[in-house]
Image (cartoon, rainbow, N blue to C red; front, side, top):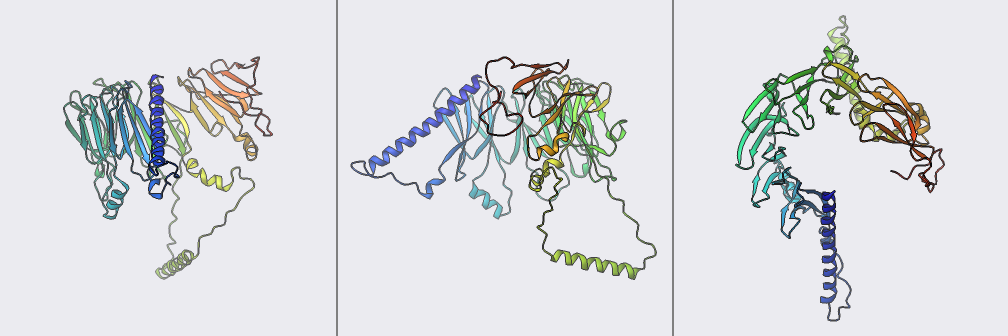
Length: 517
């Protein structure tokens, strides 16, 4: 709360300063333009348009003493302003972005881009446009700069920074680049090659590294401890790894390994997890869909949903999706002569050339049975391609539980991960074409996958409480809760002498919306 108030105060002070400066300048223009000060204001010219500013992203240090704010201008001459909140000190970094403080508020790092003019120049010369990294010691004000840094992360203890380099130019079949880990107090660097992804432990000093080399030689997962310089290999295989995920405030780690299958158009993933990595012999768990009984056939584990640990570290959540088999190629007719085959190829070439000469069709065929009209289908095409079903893998007994399915297409975990809330629009698809969007709401048991209807035909849903026990929705002009453990429903606004529904909304529906909560 203190940080939010301070940010508001500093931002408001900045706006007031701009307003006062602008007023003073306007008064000066009126006064200086003539002896009587009665001449009209100086008009704004196109040359002034680019000077207009707006506030960009701002970050506050954990002790509240430092504020870094991006200033964006119309002419793209942007800058990063770093200010100490208890003084008038100000540091301006031209083209600075993405500022981050260490958790102990001793260091600040930021990326430095190039001007639009310099970017166009480099692009004309076919040279890469690369960012630099600035690192500031907040106690001394000393600043160092590192060239060609595409990404960076501070360690939790604020002692180290990991800096990802840019990949080398040219065609490559790997995604790995150099990664430099710097000890901030001593400026000592440790370099790692072929790193495609990295992530610091949430509470602790371990750094997880995904290795992706040319030809997949030496690919795998490694963990580096900068406090003692020890580098451990957790996994090594000729495959690609992705989606590093630490469990919050722990030393548990999970990752996906890509598993190719020639019988399908796409790849699936194996899930690998470790617990207690700070120990010499951590526990290792692996979930391979191809070798797991009960995993749905023709289904794959997707990477775009990511991985999520349960709070207790006993379950890993991920998404699954139906996959497409490759079409079976029919054998050519063995009786066909070479002359007949050549004639067929020529005919195919002529047909292809004729099709290429034709202008592409702009006709759209609309079907009255489509729930979503064609323009809406286009807008949400990307979302539809990445739809997936939330699933759970219980590590200790190696059980797989699919939480979302065609009945409850979307499922979201509630705090505590004992339950998930499933939503089903299917019974009301025709109604939502011209009216409200209703859902049947389900409670899903994460341990067993069993589902139970909480309530039907709900339009205004507000999810679960922070304790993960109550589900909140609005219906019949009142707010209702459902106890997820007992299933008991309660009208929590009944008898309160006020109006919760927004009667000012001029719409003809069964249930007008609430004011909010």
